[in-house]
Length: 453
Image (cartoon, rainbow, N blue to C red; front, side, top):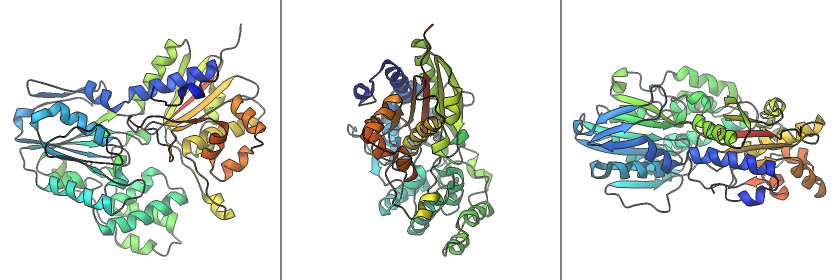
């Protein structure tokens, strides 16, 4: 099982069904299985087949003198290893930069797996990124570079001390102020030589294919890992607007604005580059839909682009769930710390998935419906098994409420201090999962038991 504490969580038939559906979602984005099923080589013909419009590609490897791999982001090391295994002797070399080095890694000639830090970059990231930049700069026009791009790449890719200094300030302050990932990455791109199409420029005139794993709203390639291989349509003024919107009172705002740089705008760098959506939350959601039908449930996809503040994100899903239905959603919510800062309170431990479930429980209690008056299970979990903590997310239902009352816990206090991890730790409702699935943002489940006829 991918959900490692499945048995402990499956305390009721309803919970078990919800967990089986979540398990199917994880299976559908398992890194090893996904790469093996979607990348094939026969008679030196490389085929990438994803059964999605504009997401398939066929290449004759004989057309290229050398083939390289670069992996960037969470899960990219394992994905790159699987791709290297498929390429075999055709692979000339490569580098993968990830937050985790796979336990059972194979020794591959001229292929390095480097470990970086996330969500904040470090000097470790600079060294690794500079190796990637050097590899790209050494490519020739008859070479092929295959790039695996996954979520988390924005923090991992950090090419200089200058970028590191500003990255730390930008991430901390913009996130705290409530900027979404798109706004954050607009600024990141204009403080970097490798993001915002910079890697493609460095690799020019080589041939480049990017296999992109989306963890962002709407699968916007230019936002995923800050778009290192994608032509960037934003300009310096866009980054300046974001900084003025959120950091107008910051003493360092003017220095940040002064040091913004333009991303590559000459389209010649992108003529031999192809970007492919390799995996996204739709893959996980469709896997969950298929499992729900096998269990005799009526699945409904609410949204693949769910946004908003985490504590309110699941309210409409709860209200939409009818008898015997399971409501599924994917997306990325935001946690706003402004109120906590105003009260000068200490920040607790948690992630947006846990906060989403806790918020839904509290709202249902306040409305005196749903959780208490019907059999309902609510889940939200990170697709890569890491919800800003060692846990993937949480499950909540009437058992959660009963346990919290027995322990005399005040759910509202835990929510206000963003301490959802410790709330669900006390009620025993944290979800733990293996970290071998692609990061395609967050997945949400609301399951209402069918009424007896």
